[in-house]
Length: 154
Image (cartoon, rainbow, N blue to C red; front, top):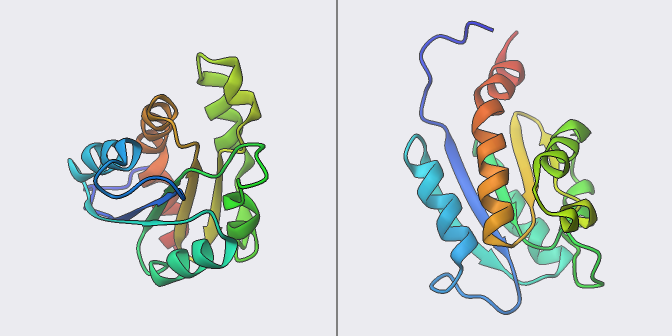
């Protein structure tokens, strides 16, 4: 696609964790750093509770992109995917497949990294580890404008 000039998108970063704070959240800081080079960013944190994840996501749904880190694994406390899927209009399974395929760690295959669409908002769900976040952001940056274009064309 010829998408013309790349605009600064509005990106919200949400860390899902019951043990981290905004100050010691290395993964959230990494996402914010890499995304703020090209986009307008904001950041928040909430505990691993479906209602709170939904509330925080819906409060930022007017943004172009929401990147959620944490809560995508097999643990009983990992409820990010089940929370976001309640409001998703579509899941783009290829994002999670690409994430797992391009990761250098076999443990990535136990992550439910995903991309959901709600209206014109892209919602990426990434694992909470800094290594996974770096890999995820690398992939997001390759496709963020393409998906933005697809969601905004007539």
